[in-house]
Length: 333
Image (cartoon, rainbow, N blue to C red; front, top):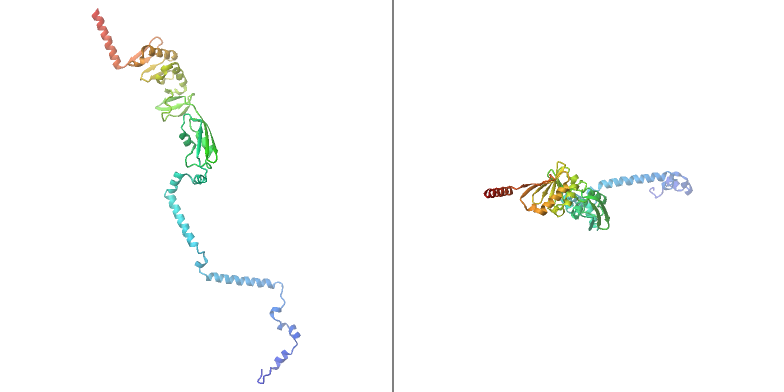
């Protein structure tokens, strides 16, 4: 405006233009009303994303690390470290092994907690073995669970036992194991080189004699006596009641038998026809009670005579008796 309150001429001229002319002039059209091409919105969106990412990076840098981490992360890390330390000490200190020794492997413990422990074991076919020996051979104890019990492996372990010829093992859920056995029948005891074995009828060694449960079996001694035990048992059966006094038989040079009686007496049987010699021994006991005499050995190897070896006391007494008889005869003469 000039001093009189009038607008300048140029301004008037501008305001005097028709409205339509102003709209046709590109210079006077607002930017919002300009025509927009197809690629315009994509560029605008990209610019917005770029600005948003820059603001995000700036805000992330601005926030401290302690505020960006989860609030409970430190607690969980501390608990994890404590658990790892306790677990390491539990294992290296031997407590884990002690736990397994007392309660079994973890899988067996879990199965027992779920109700699949072995509550009952039925065993059939027992003769020479005890129930405890069968359980140990099968690998069954209070720490075993039925779920992880290997029945086939247990069968193999049982059949590896010399006294067991055949075994059958079955699992019966929820908590029972059934074992059926077929044992080898002990036939005799065999002593060789200072060791004692249980043998079968064919001479096969069943097991080493470690206790007295097979002490009732006949005893044969010497090399190859196990394979000829049947001969001795046949002689023993011919002795009748006298057989209870025969403690053992020793095979001499693979040819003949020597008998050891329960009073310590030795009886030498012949190589040929030992059955007849056994009958003579039975007759001697019946007629003369030789078991009650001070006799160390009886030799029956000669079919027409019996040779006896007396103890030192009996021999001295016998000598004195003969001397006294000789004096009596001399005095009478």
